[in-house]
Image 1 (spheres, rainbow, N blue to C red):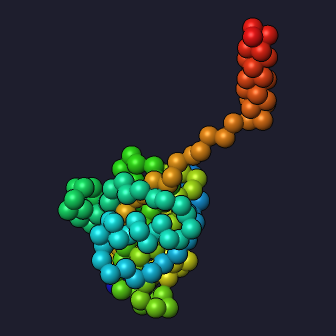
Image 2: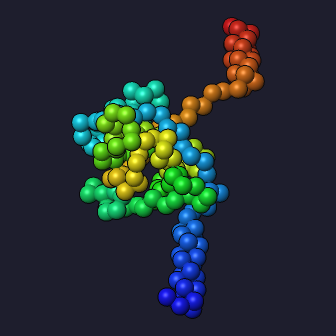
Image 3: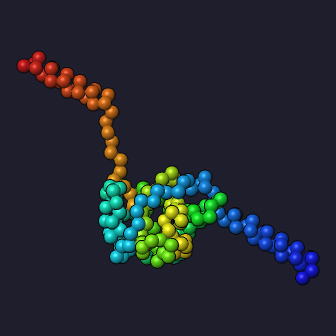
Length: 186
């Protein structure tokens, strides 16, 4: 190989190496890694089975929203997504959630060789940027991003509005005033 050919090959290698970071999604876009809660091996991928197990993990009563297929559309929802490497990381990936903003999501995989036990269902709390699911493969023991078959989205119980003490005091004063005015009339 002559020097000119060697220079071309080196230039091509440098260009390919530089282009791989172009495909990574910026961390500022997707936010922090979502909270890993629990993992298990469920008997099937039915949303009801997944929801019932997720409810038992101490996160409250969850409600199924939809499912996103990875690599091919989900047979029920028709939604399809692709995991993208987060810029500056080796094993953190993000999935755009197709406009949904779930509080929780469940990642379903095939067999994982790096995880103790045969866990294939991984529950996460969606934090920071709710429009993305962000997972750390090493944290969950998922040995290959290509093993993820789908992601199931859940909404939480919702927020409970708690009145402020001042509002309650004002309501109490109003009720006492109504009671006093009623006594005067009698």
